[in-house]
Image 1 (cartoon, rainbow, N blue to C red):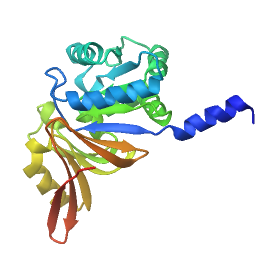
Image 2 (image 1 turned 90 degrees about the vertical axis):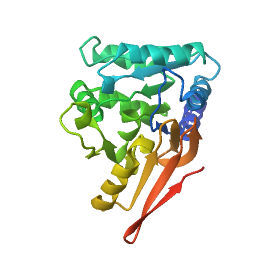
Image 3 (image 1 turned 180 degrees about the horizontal axis):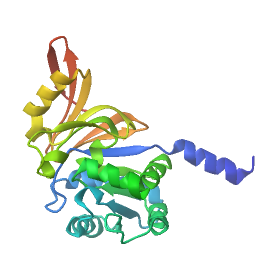
Image 4 (image 1 turned 60 degrees about the vertical axis):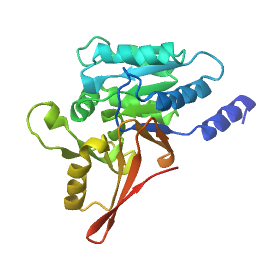
Length: 248
């Protein structure tokens, strides 16, 4: 095998598939700044000496530009990272144009909002293929709320509440990249989620508070991060539930 090909293969073997799953928080008011600092370090590591680039996906918020501007303000002014955005909801950008942005990105940041709308939109526009390809190539992914829970087998989501169609949370299928069940905003939803967990027959789950994150590498949890919040693991124990703060 030629030397260049061998080196490229070695680099691929060393590259982890990383997801930083944030339970919630406000990037505008910098409540997740300690976690953002960790995400920025991943981007700098991938960039290898050049100025890194971050790509914001705000599909869940219907491509909210104020949301993107908050992302840009934090990651550009605090961490000196170039910020770009992928817009698909209103047809502003075609897929080839967006693909170019993905190929330049040193990390993806997937914002919060309506999780079901986001996944349906990704599938309709073809963005899902670019997201999964970036993950497979080892581009670090940071996701907050909807952008975090979409990666799991099952996700506890408020999409019906956001749409004003219900006052109840729902358990939906996620992408299945990360195993198990997940609840975001656990400090706000704990009682509701514990009831859903007990009734749903689940054996285990991850619960993420606001301003907390769980880092996954190659599908396995490797690190907890806190900017004031906590991460919990839930396990069924006979008729009860064991709730334990997760510290890695």
